[in-house]
Length: 146
Image (cartoon, rainbow, N blue to C red; front, side, top):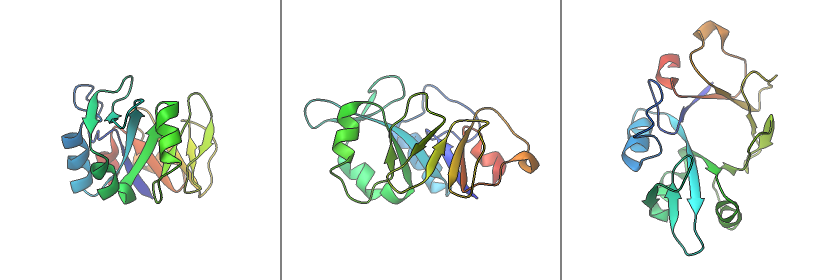
């Protein structure tokens, strides 16, 4: 099962650090994929951040790590931009139970039925033996499942 760090978190939510470049790099260095929240403005600036564009980043950061990033497009400009890019795994959703990523995975809201193509978001802690049988999980506590 693929283990995906939610915004770079490994041992619980850290609102001050999540989605920052350094925090994401730490999760990547520990061998995890990472779900990141990406924004784009009307110019060519790209940002990371959950509720707002917080950390300005260079596109090279996303390109270099694209095989390990699950990009949650947070605004229409980010989604429109990602549609022009090759090789990225990205998606858009707000309150959907399921949404397809650009690579054909089903990004799944917590506590929904899953198949082998689902990646389910898990809020809080779940005992390892109670994890669903699916392609992957995305969690703030992802290091507990390694």
